[in-house]
Image 1 (tube, rainbow, N blue to C red):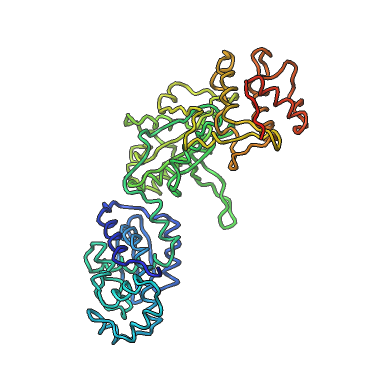
Image 2 (cartoon, rainbow, N blue to C red):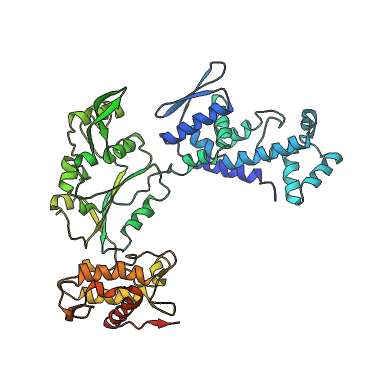
Length: 494
């Protein structure tokens, strides 16, 4: 098959147009830049973007003002227009004259053209499609004959369900988008029809190391490029790093101080300016930073059940007025979290150097425990992991973490927080080398779990030091066999 079914593609675009609920959108900055460059390259039209509208000035100085929704509508026609332009290129290849094109509409294909079509297309279906394109305009929703440069306008307007007046520029936008998959993707991927956030607005995913807390967040953020900010807390992280503050800026050879926004304010502004899309602020290792210092007054905003507003600093207030406008809901009475902004955080419960979280901060979050999974499930890739002792001997990673965690959990000095999660060691090949196992799993167990435990409560023999595992290919093997015996695992010999 060389050709696509234009009728099917047009119906698909029509279905998307009918399902689209016409919500207002803010066009991504990257799209604005790339579309402006493409328009400049392909035509003499010029475009200026506003928040919710755009203005095109034609080569004759005429202005067309249209809403951002047109870009989104136009993106539905990417496949349809690429296919229809492919048909047109074959018409040009056959050098069919304008007069012949007009005569073909609604009539039979002459013998000489039939020979060309049969020579071009080996598949019968391709021949039928191409003949329909030449003779049956209803099949591809056309109106103007295909010899005209704007023949694609009518089918786009008809299938997008808009009035054929200045809205015909949707077809022009659709044409430009059809030249760039990257451009079209900027609209079709990140813009969500409706808000599909997690049921909770502030969530902390917590559990033992390696259980997949960050993976859980990654799955939520997947395919949402441009709609989230991500940050990792650490002991030196502070309120200025999180919210923003005055910093020296070099301009025209002079040093000036300006308010520089950071991750929280960046996503705060994005969410308020685009209420029809869901935004996320992801915080990795939230308990490795001093949350009281980092959040400051804005921790009050986390209480979604109140109408609590926070008065910003004067420099932040001026910055938000410039970005949002003095009458905007996000600043008029003070700071207020937009309803379409969710905060996602991860917390490793076994970390030892943690800042305490007070109860007022904790109660403003919903908590979701990520358990260790020992079951053979499709989503549990770790079930297939093997730890290679040498070329002929291995043991299953899932058996090891299950048995060693059983020892840890029964020790009152340790408990669940010290257990090893499924992806404490991540392996794309599903094989874990002896060197990886000793340097990651064994080191953690010796240094952070059993180091101060009596030998009767440990998986290590009395007097064992971490250095005893080196070199790994000799001493390491012997020590690993001892550990496996202590946790009742028999290695498998191939």
